[in-house]
Image (tube, rainbow, N blue to C red):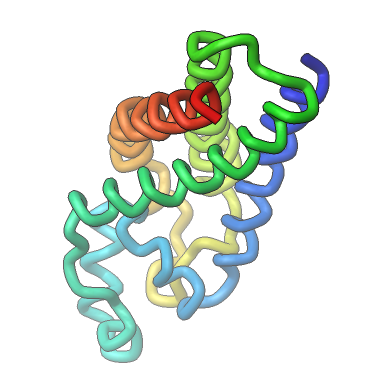
Amino acid sequence: MIVKILVVIGFCFLFWLICYANTGSDEKNMRGFRSYPKEVQELVKNDMHLASLAPAAVNMVSVFVSNVVMFSVVFCVVGIILKYTVGFSDFLDALTYFIIWGQVLNLFDLLVIDLLWWRNTPRIRFSCAQDKSLYQNPKVHVASFVRGIVMFFIPAVIVAGIVSFI
């Protein structure tokens, strides 16, 4: 059980490191452009230096599907390793673990990364929008969290089935 808990904690830390590495300059911040409040997105799109860097509108269905695929692969690789080391007793055991892992990561993303770190660090601010108050609206983060509840459930079911079958 300890190993399974450490895996979840390790992935939360890894997720934060990835977020940290993808911020710090206007160019890097563009990678997470859809995570910014609409007011900031508009300022960036109207800035003569940054407008050309701003990505076009993102298809949320393709983002959702790509996240399901990515987390299915990650959960599957780790799940297979865990099955042959610490084990899963059955489908329900594996499903419970992957649901908890996904939702802990989702909640960590909302509370620690988005609401505590992201809204307060200067690393995520665009050069044309330095005022901290522009970044305080949690609406986009909460919406992402709600989508994540469903998104993490799908890979959990897929991978629990794979891990219990093999």
